[in-house]
Length: 129
Image 1 (tube, rainbow, N blue to C red):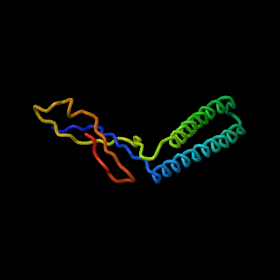
Image 2: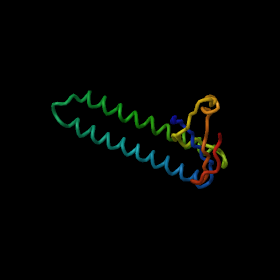
Image 3: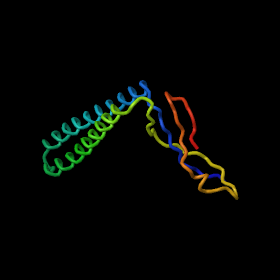
Image 4: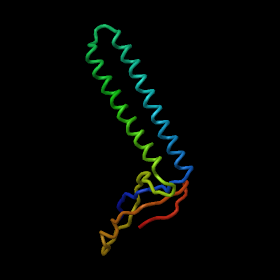
C-alpha cells in the first residue's frame, strides 16, 4: 500500500537567495499598498452614488483595507527577520507530498519521522531522514 506523507522543504540562505526573498517581500508589500489605494478609490466612488448606505460601504471597505494593512505588517516583520538571519541559516520554504510504500512489518514511527529536503540556490543539497 502507498500513502502520501508531507516532507518539509528547507532552503540554505545564501546572498542570492536572501536578495530574492527580500525582493519578493518588497514586491508583495508594494502590491498590498496598491490594493489599499485601489480600495480607497473604489470606496469614494461608491459613496458618491445614491441609494447605498455610506456607513455600510465604509465598514466593508475598512475591513478589507485593515486586512491588507495587517498583511503589510507581517511582510515588514518578515523583512526584519530576514535581515537578522545569517548566511548559511536554514529557512522553511514549504512542504511537498511524498509517496511512501507501506508494508506489513514496517515500524510506523520510523516511517512517519519528519523528513526534509534541503536546497541551496535551487539545487538539492541533501535529504534528511
